[in-house]
Amino acid sequence: MKKKKFSLKSTLTILFSIILILGGLIITVVFFNRTHFNPKDSLGNTPGNLNNKGLFCEYKNKIYFSNPYDNNALYVMNSDGSNVTILNSDQVSGINVYGNYIFYSRNNQGNKSDFSFLQINTKSLCRTNLDGKNLNVLDSEPTQYPALIGNYLYYQHFDKSNIASLYQVKIDGTEKKQLLKEPVIPTGISKNGLYYNNVIENLHMFLYNPITEDTSKLYSENSFFIVPDGEFIYFINCNQNYTLCRYNINTKEVQQLTSDRVDCYNICNNNIYYQTAEKNNYGLYRCEKDGANPILIKKGVFTNINVTSKMIFFQKFRQDTPIYYISTDGDLEVQTFTPQ
Image 1 (cartoon, one colour):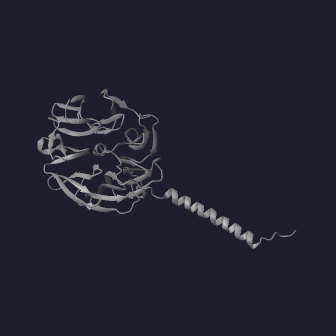
Image 2 (cartoon, one colour; image 1 turned 120 degrees about the horizontal axis):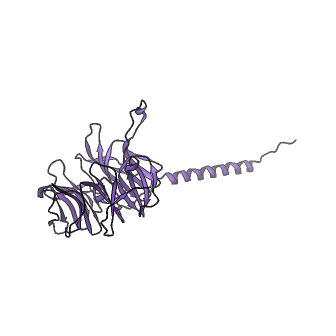
Image 3 (cartoon, rainbow, N blue to C red; image 1 turned 90 degrees about the vertical axis):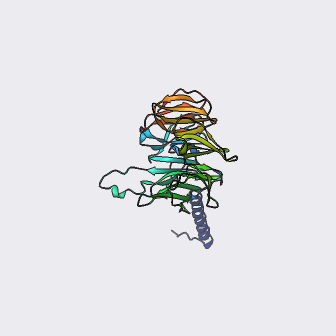
């Protein structure tokens, strides 16, 4: 039987085909693994949610959330609370979502087994795809309060001495650096920059410009829990018995909104939802954004007020479960959130 001979032309054709296939595979891998960047003015969550641990984040009719019924794992559901699905088992907070990615602080509690030394990056800043897969560690050190502006995350970074400072990192993991030595809580994000209080000296309110890296003082009284909203910056005023106030960016005027001491709050549409801290008068309240028409929602001490388009979520102080919620349509009936 005669052996079949391959001509030079046939050999070159086969080699060329192999090169084309390999090239196509390489291009496909590079395309699906490349970082997809965001518009410069994109924000990863609302400043109000981020101030309340960023446990819920709504993006394109989906709510990404930390599920305390399942060890604070990362879940997703529709905006109406239906179709609840687990994305991954990381214990998450500080959830930001934009474009192709989810960003969060991971705080996995490593077990105390003989193999616990194998566990790495259990407390870190992470990025995943919207399906919770393809995890990338952007900062392998402990982090908290991540906030996305454009293509950069601003967050508290803890060094080996457990000292916190303000860091940034680009969403592809590059350009990681310390911005301020102070343990700034960078949750007051807006398209103007980052509003924060000077926690080292006097708690005065500042604006940090991430483009120029300049800081400027806005308000010279002790303030914290800063939430920019339109022409106003809402904050808790330490100099006025921790009442809720707002600062007008244009007129520089400050308006006191509550007479009661406030522990935490959030803003949704035209209303503020806030927790009072007056002795014998603890409760979750709602008022209008100018402080008018305060109304009691539920007596007790509550925290972690997170808002979405249809629901306001909150928890009892020092109790992860149950999660309560009310509707954003004006109905103040408190219901228990049981994701399933």
